[in-house]
Image 1 (cartoon, rainbow, N blue to C red):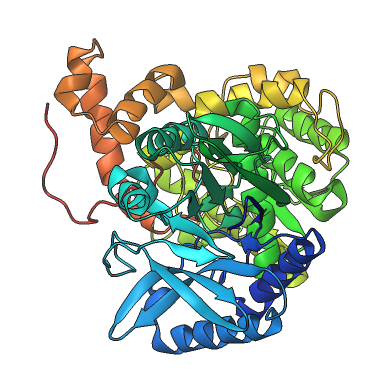
Image 2: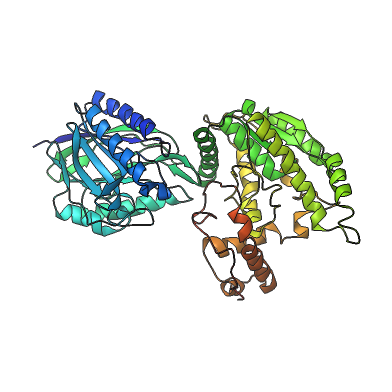
Length: 544
């Protein structure tokens, strides 16, 4: 019986649906495991397919391709260490989230996730499997968040517990994972390997940050967040059972850096996996577009970012100057396309239809929609991806123009409240990391951060003409959205009743806009999109 077991773990970034490409990543990691003399390579949950696959995971033709790819990978890796890899898997007439063990050219074990969800059917708890005489238990994905599967594995002879996951990032999520995994270790008395995907997929960002715990909950290895990594973990059997030897201990950044990195990873992977190399955005001189431009420069490199000023008669000179200074500091290209003549043409065209009416929000929105037309024309002509620049506060209350400033393919700020936008700008001015492709230093002019936010669609306009102050608005929104609190609960906390009711109505009546809004990365425990969807037609209102 072996007294030493080397396990190679690989937190890598698959592309959803690219089965040959993801299998090639697995094969490359397997070669590293083989060269290191490992007995096994462990890959995360749903690595072959990518995650989240949604209804694609249940498509028969896709499942057939998954099986063929797994069988070929087993053949290609017949001579060497075993592989554990996650994939959607059909068993009879049911579809499962599976973790498959490949050794000697064939599938030697399959672990099916016990808990089901919208994509996968539930399954009985899988028992331990053996690799080179060592019995390994597996709590797959969400099965590791409760005791049942891990305890069953320990009771049926598991000696080490593996927890492959495809767990997306949100603030404090890594600490939550550690808390759950320490509980599993305490309950079972077994060492544990938590292994997570990396990379962005639509609204989700998988942050990696895999780790290994010894009995007692002592961390022996910590891989970095948001980066691909391969590590070799040596387990030694002693009188008290198996223990992992100490390994890499990568530091975990604070939440401001993690949020910023998540936005960059999400944007970069969304573009790369969609076949785009260059980004385009409207640069108004305001704080939101400034932050998006900075994220794009840090992600893609300044040479791959194109900013456009689109001034109207209401644009202030200081905003035009701020936008120019922002582009200069980042080293990105900036063009200027005034919308004045186009606005005059539309006004003249509508003059007869609008006769006898008073100018209102309609005329303001025409300006925003003209900007959207010009930006989309540039995107179509040159193949650049148009980025949206609306923050979560605006997305929540609908403070945006549908088919205007909402035009675009991806919104890095979709889950970042306005108050956090300001603080993130300050953080970026004070911090630079090696992975950032933009310049170091004070890249965001302090004047942009300091000035009152304004859409500049009418003379002297500020956001607070239409909305409560952002610190107040964001506090109410966090209660309504992240904590799902009622209007009466917020009023009981001391918020003004009229303001709460106004915000509740704005959030409810903006649902139709969110259905048509560009996706963006999840940063909070509850983001719009996959985390929170309400009916478009909904007569019920929370009246407090």
